[in-house]
Length: 64
Image (tube, rainbow, N blue to C red):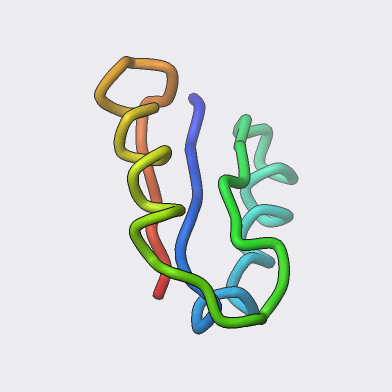
């Protein structure tokens, strides 16, 4: 299973979910953001959605 994850600065602290999924043997890709600094949500949502739409990933998780 492959999961894409993205969000905005408000959801940054919840990215520990990546570690949890990895420990369960689930392949993940973090599309950002990579810090808690303010960002525009669509900049990170669109790549996640495109990856799921193109079947690069089975699921996408968006956190904001």
